[in-house]
Image (cartoon, rainbow, N blue to C red; front, side, top):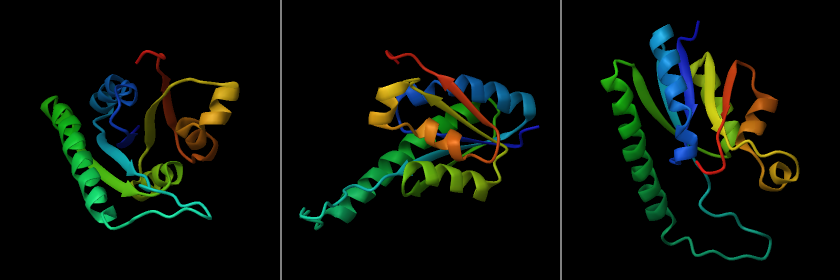
Length: 149
């Protein structure tokens, strides 16, 4: 049923709560897992703001290296369990980047965790899961995590 499962991760334990579900699905359907991390813009300028960009490239490269190491660890854990897994790092706004990666990789399922906030908290903080949910064109598995995770 699912040949490729896209799993967006941000390095948090909360996001990793999806992993047991992904492992089960990947083993059941012999699916490839694609771990995705989205590099967000390091800074955003307002109309009257100034930012020294002299070390921008250095910071970006350090973030990329951390993402590579993190995803390689998660990828290795699944491979030890016999699951075909790979990693993907992209740049841009998070929700569009997830949706574009899913389309480009022809993922049959996007699987992610959500903190489960609703109402005003969701409106104020925004929600990647809600953003994906409202724009997704393929099956989406969202698990709700507790506030302490």
